[in-house]
Amino acid sequence: MENLIGKRFEKLVVVEQVKSTASGQRQWLCRCDCGAITYKATDTLNNDEYSSCQKCAGKYAAAKAREGAGFFEGTQISKIKDMSPTAANTSGVQGVYFDKRQNKWRARLRFKGKIMSFGSFSRFEDAVFARKMAEKEYFGTFLEENDLNR
Ligand SMILES: [Zn+2]
Image 1 (cartoon, rainbow, N blue to C red):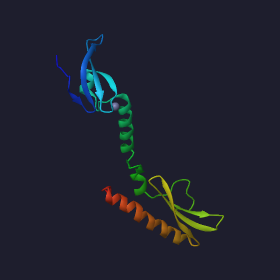
Image 2: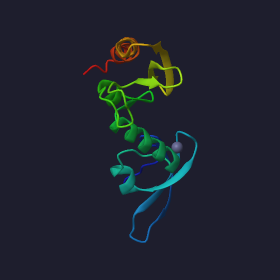
Image 3: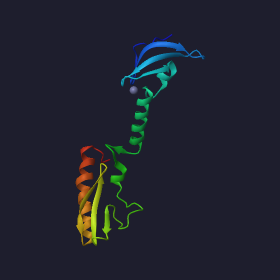
Image 4: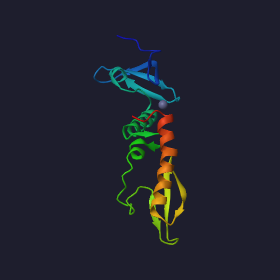
């Protein structure tokens, strides 16, 4: 019978053995790094990819999901690498749209959840140029600094 008291499993430290389940599995009272108490069977502790309380497990799963979708610091890497226009886009260039009220082309860029504006232009080409420069400045630097240019 393995004594797990004092052992660490990722975020959990085993505090004491509590009871056995009907199937004879030993249960352990564990303390999570966040302070929460949780009960785990020996098998669960040994086999879980990530042992923690339920709350931390939820956070972990969410982080994994974001990682899977290519998120880094709230920015979806695949999105800024692939600049093909979305369905909602009418100009054919991502981040460039026609402002009917001003009768001008506008360039903008969404980065880290914020939308930034890069001016309005009479000529479509100028708006595209402004957008491209902004992409280089914001996305390029971001990818480089975080070594995501792969
Ligand atoms: Zn926790």
